[in-house]
Amino acid sequence: GAVSLGRARGVAVDGCSFANLGSAYALSVGGASQQVSVVGSSFTSLAGGAVKLGNVDDERALATSPERMDSAFRVVDNTIRLAALELRGAAAIFAGYVRDTTISHNSVAETGYTAISLGWGWGTHVLGRQTFMRNNHVVSNRMERVVSALNDGGCIYTLGPQPNSTVSLNYCEADRAPVVGSFYHDNGSRYFRTTRNVASNSPAPCVYLQGCCGAPALDARRTAPRARAGEGSTDGPSPRGPGGRVARLVPRRGAAAQQLRTGRGQLLAGLPRPRRGLPLRRRQGDSGERASARGVASRGA
Image 1: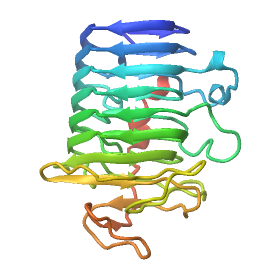
Image 2 (image 1 turned 180 degrees about the horizontal axis):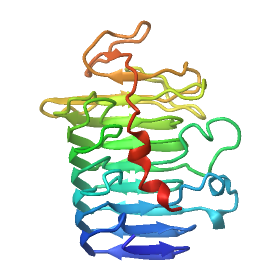
Image 3 (image 1 turned 90 degrees about the vertical axis):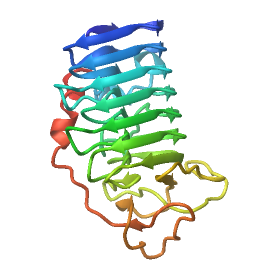
Image 4 (image 1 turned 180 degrees about the vertical axis):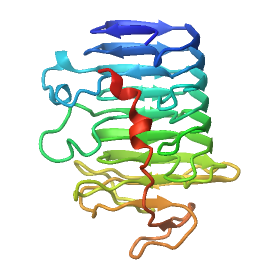
């Protein structure tokens, strides 16, 4: 990053301005950093992404000592405009292997790729030993005119098992990617509670869920009972903006792994029609640009 923090503790990046930068990320925080906040800052005209958190080291992701973990990040009330203008595979906000992290109330617009990317590893750690990723929350962000250059991304993109994590109350306008979905849980994503999100004016469906590894993936339903250990639930009404589509999906252990996608089309057999959304249908994902889209994040740990 143009500004990089490693093994940082108790640092606040508050009210700063990052503009006209040619680096892969404007601000990079990792190397087992903890309790770092990025608040009320602006990021404008960036060759790459705005904020990079955590690491993409599959070995260190299995650490059990808190001292080796990237944790307790807050990215709140920031404005990001014109990101990934040249390094197209950079998410505006990227968080790799992290825990206890909150990304909320940010405004992101005009990006080459995904607005907010959370998690790493695809299916590497779905079975066997689990990473330290957990308790991560992407809440109340506004994202507009994203994924203008690549395809295999969305307004919010996740990877890997992350127990007790949420994607809620986010608004996505004009996700330009024609396939996958605005709220995209990719390979190995598990244990998310994804509720009360709105997507509007996009050629792709609201939600895309990618099965993985022959393991249980999700359960999509209109409502769900109170959550039990290891399960998620959706309760209460979902918002709906003008022309918007509503995301209401529930990861659970007991359902068969499969790819699901909300959009116009035939209802999958055995699944109830969502009361306020659009039907569900099968569709194969287009992952041809996956390597390119993840290239920037994989350059550093």
